[in-house]
Length: 438
Image 1 (cartoon, rainbow, N blue to C red):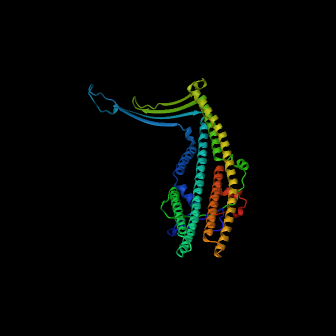
Image 2: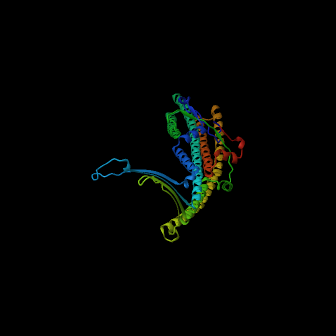
Image 3: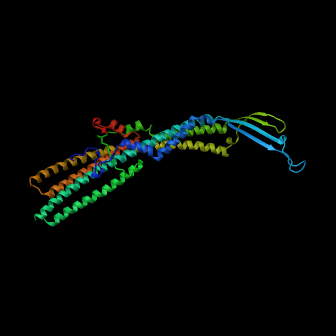
C-alpha cells in the first residue's frame, strides 16, 4: 500500500470470514431506524399529537350523558307487609347535554396544531441525529479494519525479518541477541494485532446489537468514501443554517406555544364563560312525565382582576414562562453560533494536518523504496530496511488517524448545522468530481 487517500475501504481480515454477509451504511441506517426504541417511542408520541390535532374539535365538544334509575317502594311489615305490585315500581330516564364556551378555545386549537408541528420536528431531529451517529460508527469501524490491515502487514514483515535473522544465526553470521530481538518484535506485533482485533470485534458486536442483529452473526462492512478538502466559512454557515437549525426552531416554536398559552389563559381567565345546557327526564313516579329543561349561564370571573389572588398569580406565571422562553432562544442562538464556528474552524484546521501527514507518508514511502532497492543490491542490511519499514508503517498509521479525525470533523459540522453529510460534502468540496459514495 503506497498511498492512503482520504478513504476507508473494507476488506476481509481473516479466512474464516470469507462467507460474511455484507452490511452497507444505508442498510445499517434502515435497520436502526426500525429497531431503535427511542425512535419508536418518538413515532408513537408523534402519532398521538397528530391524532389530537386532527380531532381539535374535541376542545369544544359538549359533555353528553345519559342515565337510568329504577326503584321499588313497598312496606316491609305494616299494611300487609312486603308486596310486589307493578304500581310500586318507579323509573327515570335522563339525558343531558352541556356545552361550555370561552374566548380561549381558538387558541387551544392552535396550540394542538403547533404541538403536532413541534413533535414532527422533534422526530426528524432524532432521526437525523441517529443517522449521523450510525454513520460515524460505521466508518469508524471501517477505519479500524484498515488499521488491522496495517498491523497484519507489520506482523508479516516482522516474521520475514525474524526468519532471515534465524537463517543468519544458524549460519553463524549474526548473534543470538539480534535473533531474540527479532523474535520479540514478532511477539509484540502479534500482541498488538490481537488486542486491536479483540477491540474491533467488541465494537462490531456492540454495533450489530444496536442494529438489532445477532452480535455473533458474521458480517463484513461494505462501503467506500472519498472526499476532498471542504472549504467552509463559519459566517456563511451561520447565515444559511442558524434560522433553520432545529434547536433554534424548537425555541421559536416554544415561544409561539407560550404566546398561545398566554392568550388562551388571558381570554379564559379574564373573559366570560358561557354555559349552555339541555336536559330531558322521563319518569313515572307521579304518572308519566317528560320535563325538558334548557339553560344558559354567563359567568364573569372577578378574582383574576384582584392583584395577589391565586388566579392573578397564575396569569403572572404564564407571562413569566413566555419571557423565559425568549431568553432561552437568545441563549440557544449564541450557543449554536459558537458550535458552528468551532466545528468549522476544526474542519479547516485539520485539513492542514492531513496534508502534512500525506507529505510525511510520501517521504517515508520513497525512503522505503530506496532502502529496499539498496537491500536487494546488498548495499544495506536488513536492519536498515526494517527501520525504514517501521517508519513507513508509522506514517501510514498517523495518516489514517488524521483522516479519521478529518472525517469526524465533517460529521461534527454536519451535526452542528443539522444537514446530511453527503450534501455538505457535495456543496463545499473543492473537487466535487472526485467525491463518491458507494
